Image (tube, rainbow, N blue to C red; front, side, top):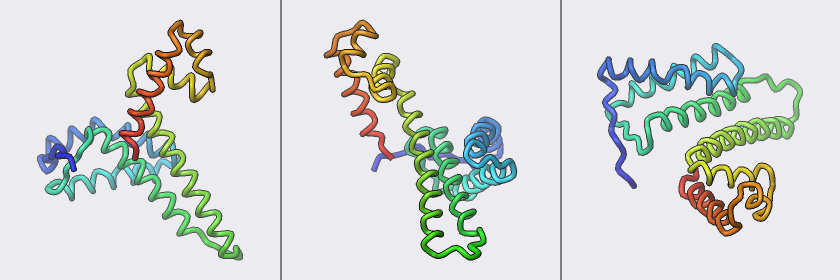
Length: 172
């Protein structure tokens, strides 16, 4: 296990700075998923309360911003699970409820994974990112990418290999 950086958040000024710098971004992540102002505010508040309460044990192995973004996405998933559990089941058969719960969880997980993948792809070098997106999003083959970008097919293959290796190393 790699050694992460330990953050001392019990210092009020450090914590306030962290809150000011990241609140809007975390709120935007939560709101983009929930479309609920109050729920999003509560989720972000929960993240910061958790940080404050766990400051002595907190070791973050990635950047603090990545840690907070992941926390927001996981809180959003927890929110959807809680909403699903609290809904009245009425006359629904247990099988129907299981299907709805599974669908909501799958949709939330898909959104999270898509966002995480997009974030990782953004970290690739520009040319590598462009080649990878042409390959995966536009479904272009090696030859088509090479022609479009004016590079060799071998360079295209190298960029795709580099991108896939990078993504595999940073999987969830």
